[in-house]
Each structure stands twice: as structure tokens, then as C-alpha cells.
Amino acid sequence: MAVTYPRAWPDLRGVAEIAFTPFSVSAMNVSPLSLEAQVYDWPGERWEVDVSFVAMKRADAERWIAFFTSLRGKVGSFTLGDPAGQVPRGTASGSVTATGDARARTVTLSGGSGTLLAGDWISFESHRRLHKVLADVTLGGSASCEIWPSLRAALSGAAVALSGAKGRFMLMEPPRWSIGLADIYRPPSIKAYEDRRP
Image 1 (cartoon, rainbow, N blue to C red):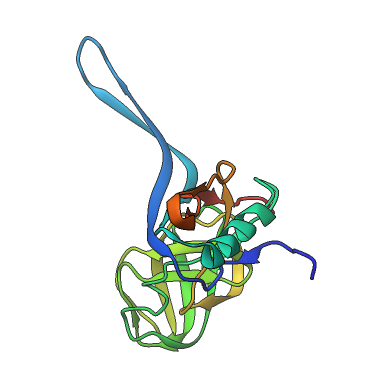
Image 2 (cartoon, rainbow, N blue to C red):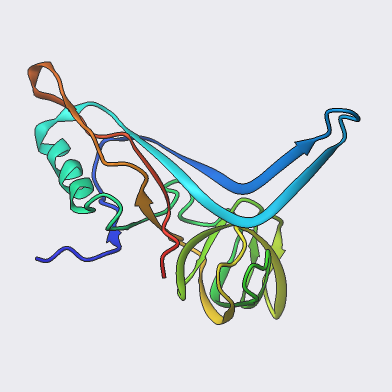
């Protein structure tokens, strides 16, 4: 079977930890005379992720190694979500759509019922990008929802994934794995960031 992108994250054993980092493009300039600071906030925002693995036998390790090798460095992409956050902590349910302008940090959610709590994950079917809900939201009718990162493109009636939210990621660097004594494999610890290609 031909490899196509984005690839789904394998449902395999061996992940020790997944760490998400919210990366925002910002800078600060401090006057050497008054020590007053000026902060610059640019629109670039993305998730970065570090994944580490436990030591494992070859049978399990080779499947991970094949997966990362199939990405061909930065050519391919894969979808990944927070494995512990696949279901909202709130009571959100039903069919929900979103509307918002490009670069907006607030979207309008329509439909559905229940609540999304600060920290819940959502994604939109029109683009594969993970968003973190920043404040509690009560669904039903029309509700404003603060999210991070900001929207990359405008949304108009886009379906919202309340459960199983996933984003599209690409590798920062080629994978490197090691083989120890007694054929104990350590799949690559990977660093990846959001794939912002169209």
C-alpha cells in the first residue's frame, strides 16, 4: 500500500511521554538606560511536540522506526492529538460549527450543547490544527470561544471536532534510533512542529 500524507499516528505501544509546547513569535527590547521594556507580539503561533519512547524489543521498535522513516524527513506529515485529552472535560456534545476570521483568537461556535472547559482541545475539519480552549464556554445558540493558537485561515460554518482533536505535524530533524545489548531498541525521540503547509 502506498504511503500518503498526513499519516495517522500509530496505535502502538512504547510511548513514554508526549510534551506539547505552545510557541509564540515574540521578542523584547530593553533600554540600556532606563531599563524600560518594549514587547513585540507577532502573529506566528504553533504547537511543538517532543515524543520519547521506552526501550523495547525489535518487534515493537521496527514499526515505529518504519513509521518515522516513511515521513522522509520534512517531506511527510502525521496527525497527532493529546492521548490523554481525546475527550473534553466539559459536557460538550452534538454538532457544532465554527466561524472566525484569519488570525482571530476568538471563534463563534454555533449548535451543540453542554460546556467546553478551559484546557479542552478542539480542531476544525477544514484544517488539521489543534486548538486549546482558553476559557470555559457554554454551547447552545451562539457562543464566543477563546482559542490558542489563532486561526490560520478564516472559518465559515466549519465542523468542530469536540472529541479526538488532532493536528498535523512534521519532523524538525531526521529520526535516529539506537540498538543496545540483548537486542533492546530505543526508537527515536522525536521533535516535531505544526505543519503549516496548505
